[in-house]
Amino acid sequence: MHFILSDLPPVRMLPEFILIELITILEPEPTINFTQQKPKPKDVSEETYEWFQKKWPTDIIISCKTHEDFTILLNSIPSNENSKTIIQYLTTLLSLPCISSSDFLMDKITRIISSYCGSSTASDTVRLFKLSDNQKEAIKIVERGITNDLIGWKTWGASLPFSKRLMSDDSIFQEIRLDQKENDNNSVESQKFYKILELGSGTGLAGISILQKLSNCQNFELYLTDLPEIVPNLEKNIYLNHPLSENVHILPLDWMDHSGFIEKIGSDIKFDFVVVCDCLYAPEHPGLVVNTVNHFLKKNGQLLLELPLRPKFEEERNDLWQLLTKNKFVKIREEFDHGVDDFGESSYIYQNYKKNT
Image 1 (cartoon, rainbow, N blue to C red):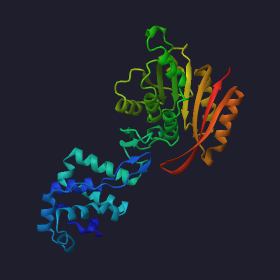
Image 2: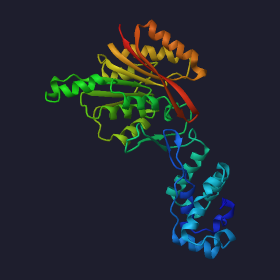
Image 3: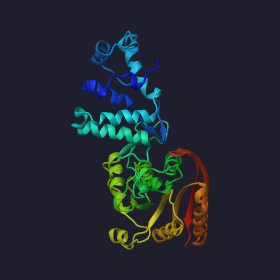
């Protein structure tokens, strides 16, 4: 049966309980790992079915002999309509008194409209990520719309293949996990503590994955950093997924000026690992990244790097690699990844460097 929004009664004729059910039906399924999930049938009440049979007995409504038939009919609307028409319909609902007087419904409709407009415009959208097939509970990431060039409010593609690799590859952070096992019976004071720094943490997917990877370890501290405007949303996402983590610090770090960060952590702190995902968006970034890594990574420390192989930023990637070589970073591992983000299929490169100076 082909049923579209124009087959419904005028919106001002619909009772509030039906409007709420229609809003729920029009809400798209969440994305998991940047992939839109197939629509799942939403519940339609017996009361709604009876109302349509009595108040709007069109041929297609009458043809629904059972409540189940009618539920299937209403649930077919999102797949039969285009996004533009759904947006127009939802916008019309915003003018109804029963909707405009409810902050909850206004917020819900606004978020649904944003999701149909595209993720880059959506405000406070929760996205889901699963890093393995047997992961029971998805990672929840709150994203905000990209405005004023605040690209850290969005989850960028490279953090997903890095996070997946992190969860499946036991060689990454192996030292931390092995030392934890060896020291389980020793006092905390005798253990070695590892320090991990992530540059440009954004919405926090990679940082959350590190916390999951090291969930059985207490011998590390994780510092997640980004620009001051990005930090509040980053904090929100870490708390949303790991509310009890005591070994994570979330701080602003400007690659052009390290002084504020150094003032917070102390001038003598160096890191065993530095993690960088998807860090090149301007010609000056390679120099800033290498300078920042150089400053904070200790001798023989490791740099974990995941980059998208975007044609547009080939020059920046080459500059980064040349600067790392010039600064005596030795590449000890390189592998290629493939994935999907909001812009389609993408290729990525994972690299592991050791600092020898």
